[in-house]
Image 1 (cartoon, rainbow, N blue to C red):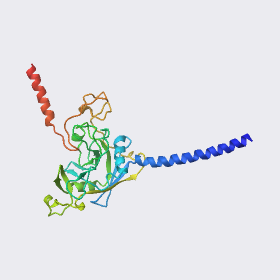
Image 2 (cartoon, rainbow, N blue to C red; image 1 turned 30 degrees about the vertical axis):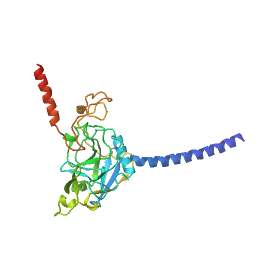
Image 3 (cartoon, rainbow, N blue to C red; image 1 turned 45 degrees about the horizontal axis):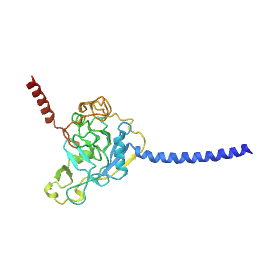
Image 4 (cartoon, helix red, strand yellow; image 1 turned 45 degrees about the vertical axis):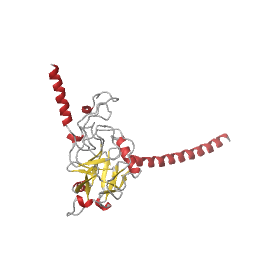
Length: 289
């Protein structure tokens, strides 16, 4: 009797275990959505999609941040708000609500910098605030050319977290549109007739912008970047604090760093301040002698 009861109990426990395993597997499958490494971006400019392979295994914090915005629909119906010719195409931070200026989207908390890969053509990277290494939130940009000598070296390095595997021609097409300024934004790509000028865009419509209609998951595999060979940055981050050594006064101490003081949001570097600092230092030494 005891043996029979034990067998029944064992079978019952086995069924419970299988049920729990099924639930766990289903939950894991759902969770893997957040580990997706290939996303697709649909813009109003073309039916063709921009497919981006994310580096989730090497820039996990940045990829998770990006996917959280995707999951919340943050980028849906936002607009590409900046083109710097022969440099970057930037989006993720603004939408058009019917009148100028563009409306900023509410961003979540900043994410830690992960300056591992180089800002070469076709990569996607996070935009940041000047003089603030760990300030990336919702804005990102595509590199239109090899910007490594610039963006790998300033403000602790800009985090590249993926690369375009299809549709780079769409990104290039956006970069070729007419550019207008409005409010604090410069270089807004506008869809307009050849004969039109920015002055004619005092009352634009949604059709005049490059709208990001959606950003969705194309492949939710945990790792899909195994066949990619992204170029790593030549600027080391010895202590792994997210700040490259040349911008870090304490390259061996992950608890300390000194951010550099030149940068805009994904844009340009100003070496003048650095040169002036060097001159002042030399002048001080000369006079102290």
